[in-house]
Image 1: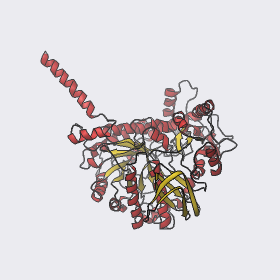
Image 2: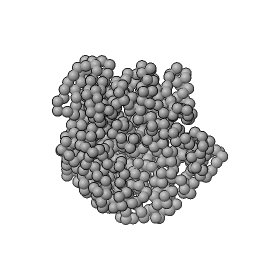
Image 3: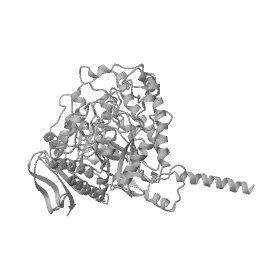
Image 4: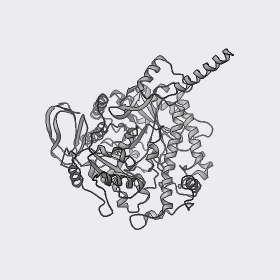
Length: 636
């Protein structure tokens, strides 16, 4: 009897020990002890440990218990890579495309895919392209950490066999489809399990889950997946969340183009809500699969939440709240904004409310696909991929000179540094940065970023908060109102001070931390009603667009912020990024620029050979047009 009791107790202890081995510790340093003494007992996983953890007040990438510079390199066309150049510049973090299917990244299928897909042949997965892609990076950088970008689009055989699971294009998977979700989950699990058993498992730092149009989780048809195949999924959604609502079936999408500022169809609003939530649910589902497959030991991230950039409610990107509340997602990505068609004199912000992402403990990762004077059209750089010259618009070309190219790179880097974002240089077709002077810049930037991780305070010191409302898009017919969040970022970029950007759902949690409050929507959603009532109750002044005044100039925004006591660093309509230890300026016009620091600082110019140090309360800087300067500042 005693022996049986002892056996039972030992079994219980063993179960608790196994559970503990899968526990994700809050303190990464605790993991280091376990890792070094070999106390983990992972059955499926034998790699490293990475997580999102606090570094100077900002959610940051940690690898094996230490903050790690989230500065990476990636190219789509791996045969034209510059891995060796970037490894020589100190980069040891890389991303790489991994394809479920050998299909182009959008629904048109008019370009050749980057390489074959793992599941192109039914029942016979082929991991050779994945293995060779990883090997190519490790050969160039033996100490590399890699986070694969997994494109979860379905192969041709699957779409031909599952016509009832396709979206409005009639040829790509519907993001509402349960069968797509199940198949993609199985494929994702298989890919990660293959990597777990590979010789390069210890090089994998995490995964970026990608899908939908352009890999950014847009509906392939860019029309809310609207087709007969969506009807059952929508009805199920109504039954679950709005039982007894009184309407069924698909709504009339043409109401989005109606007269007046808003449509009045709750049926349509619910469908648009469903169209975004279905995409977010896919991402949450797949992130859960990825976490389980890695024993919860690696960071998982995704593109999503472009509520500042994508103003159409038909794309499926307006359910960021769901992603923010998902414990399985550690980082959120977007490219730098395309506002102004990447005008050199525009602030290229994040496409999502970045400070809400950080508030919820997730890393902001920016895709810095900066075109340079070396950038060529795809049809010229690699004609075998774009024989019909489909990628031929000017957005695919960079500035005319190396000097301007370097300034654009500096501007983007300065924003990521001061905002505390991670980032990767996205050398899409290869060769964009293959210049000794640019690589020298890249080396210096990586060193500066690594140094920033040692700063005591990396979090924002902004006194101005800007709130957007992703739910508002599903009600607006007036394009000028719908585009208010998008358009307001341009004058906000000339404000002369940094601002923080939030989703309206976080209003009460953070509003008291700021002197000036700006809204970008006038639609009276539940979130906006709560925020406005809170302002009224607490006597908080704010600025917001209306049906009468939809836009603000930089001067109007600056005057309001100053009236609320917010410090304005620069009055000259240039782009300024301000942080605790760094400050940067990009000149929109040539001339002498003045940055009022508000106290005496020791200021050292970075990314320059002279590194002049000045002690002053006002930086006076002669600048050319389209020039970017970055300073490290220390309060005296």
